[in-house]
Image (cartoon, rainbow, N blue to C red; front, side, top):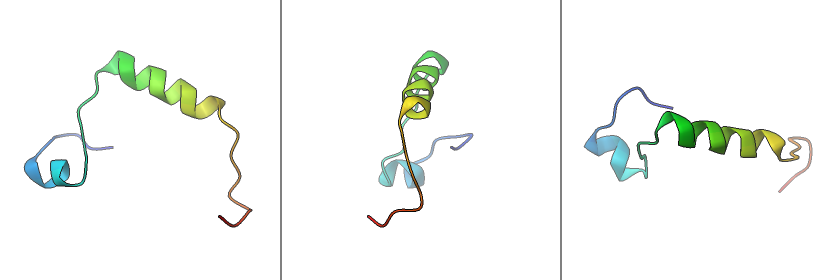
Length: 40
């Protein structure tokens, strides 16, 4: 999460998303099951 975009962040794959897209992506992420206890 960044407040502003610049070439340094773009180098690492950062992109700009609008509020509607962000909300959709957030809801999809929240709906997924995850565990931080198991090794990868």
